Length: 280
Length: 231
Image (tube, rainbow over all chains, first blue to last red; front, side, top):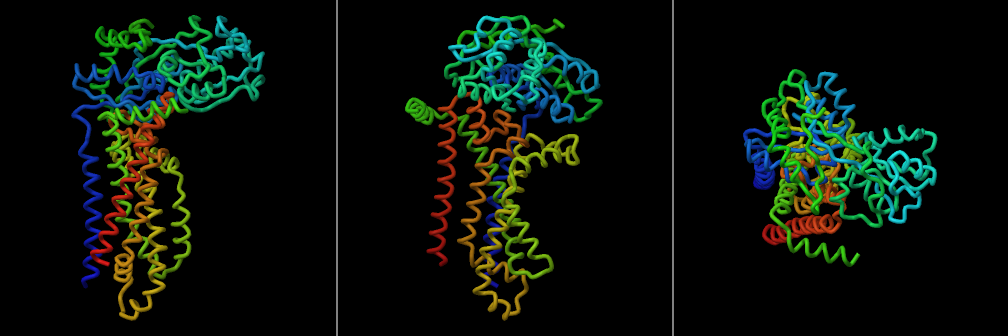
């Protein structure tokens, strides 16, 4: 039957079109050795990885794929075995991760710092205060404040500061306190649109382009120190983990060339990340 | 606003190879997904239209409802299935373009099947009597009606393509938005918006719309050419 043959022919044609698209997608497979790194939105959105990874790949021949999530999510992905290396910034959570056996060792890599960003006219009068004093003034003035609310390293730092300020967030929070449940960029976007205060890492703030009327009000407080650590996922928990290549990446990060590459990354002349491998 | 528009236009003028690679990946993933979904969805929709069996109404209702499956839920379920700790973890497909193709295929199969079923069912109202009187089985009847309505089916497939290439929830979750590997137009637009680079995000958005318009223009040209050639 002619009609039948022709209809199968057109279906066959579609199949060829579809599957050729599929094979080209599959053929674009990874180079011989590629590791997956679960990391944080702050490292990705600050542009550090774009600068750093090509240098590592050039010296080692190992490709690196970065999945940028909040610290909590990144550690979850690593626990599930969906990453070879985790590079995050929440020391307490990282130590738990190691204690639970998901990794055998945590390597301090670098630090950056948090800043409190807020409206230029500073209705709460937070400018120049310490971080805990600034939070007290913001909450007393019920000035709008944007929280990440996403279990990220920045979010857990923020919660720690509220506690250290002696404030019970559950009791004092109201309309002025907005949880966006997203990455640093969206939190900054929300803050800039509503003229609110927000805790940000300096790197994302410096590379953020839509600042509106916001500026840095609180910085330089010792408590605002933000340590990054790298951990190889334990191959005993997940046998498919590319332990050798993953360890090579960590070793490079904490080596002299890796640390120099981190220190060399700048936006507008400002250094964002300060290498401190081997500290604690 | 004018400043943003001006910046946007200059960004479009300066589109670099990276953007072209991202657009290429978007096209590859969505075309592959729509191709696979067509292979499954068109025969499925055709058969459901001509066959009579118990529970047919339920199947039709299910297909129609599944057209509205939320992409992010498909992404999440597929993430759990493909994760190394999930049942299909051994395949190592999470955070790859293949996982994104799988997610978009699942997303648009119901759409293509449901629209095909409707189109073929309408054609069957006109021709079904004749075909049955020839004593043809349901596979043949479905095939003939699918062939007969092929030009209308192109529209259904285009709708599926539009849904696939513009979704972000599923590809973001199972692809991971990895730079140079699983970053698509939609995830790139979302990332640039998050970074506050609105002109670049808008420029990418205009490129995405241009792609969708171009694909549908090519399809409708092919369709009118084929209609003239084969009537």
